[in-house]
Image (tube, rainbow, N blue to C red):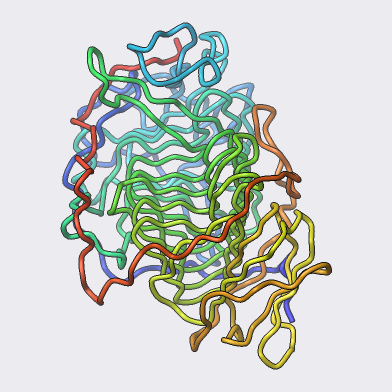
Length: 506
């Protein structure tokens, strides 16, 4: 029997099998201060000066030490020259107060003063390479931008190795990737759920034994001048405009998000590490409609969504969600009609341990050894839930992170006769179990996750109320190899190409 409240994790970094094709278009927006037009692949990175291990593998890179007193790069004060591989400036992209409806879609609750923005130090990374980031900034951001040619350049890859890093940004994401190599495609007609992002230009790696924290905000949609098309819109505390990989062994990343937690505009793959997310809205999001794929191959992902905005899925993919291994505990908002795991095109539970709770359930397109459950009355956060097999033996127990009425469990031993109960009520059974493998690990107890002052909240859940209603699966299973149908109402992205205007600090 497994008690899913704490764990010990030692996991080697997983890699996928083949590189994916180049993205069709480059990113549309970059910070106003970056005028680099893309030397990208000559990768003039500074000499390696730091060494850590990630998943037991030795990694060398440029050492970036964060501090409110001043950032250093390989032991020297960071440059302010925009041509440097790493430089600092007070030019964070944010949504300024006092704007009318012609500026963007933000309201007073999304806006910040110029003085608040100017208090933030942005650590700009402009050259490909590996950067080992340590230290703390109470008002800052790491921003990666390799220039307008980077999206098509396979060498335009930046790996941020977080090694005891603590970043707080109250006006925008704490970490953002603007322009790096894009290994994926936005072509809806050829979109499939089986993608490989091993060549992705945006990589976050968690150093072994490290605990890292990102307390981040977001940027509401800002229009391109004289249009209503998007110039800037960054919803997550950790955000990437390109496909993003997260790697690691037992290193921890705590994400405390005013809005969404971990976001990618195309694909997102978790191969390892321990990721704890407390978010105001969705915990994890990938937002290219009918194309994006969120893949979990290993590690442990733990999500408490909807802490502050009254809504939020644990994971929300505008395309597919594929879980091949590792462990996932995803709790939707306590008070809204949201799902622990939500996907527009289909969910595949191929391996690992999955616990998803909320007030709705999306269809499971494929997988094995899973079961869905429905409770007549709301299960409160903190309740101990026990899953038993058809023989009555305990498979696992878990503590409810948020209130919920509907749940899904995937684990070794879950079969057609599996059941789930709390101390007060038994659940009605839903979907099927079946044969399959086991690759999961118990998720952590969120030790070290410190919420930001601007909206995050600490574990455990927030009691709440709401209308609970089971929802029938809505998405049919696609035949093997079949592409999804084109939705008639979708007109594609409103991005039109690189733009360097926008609200920034001074």
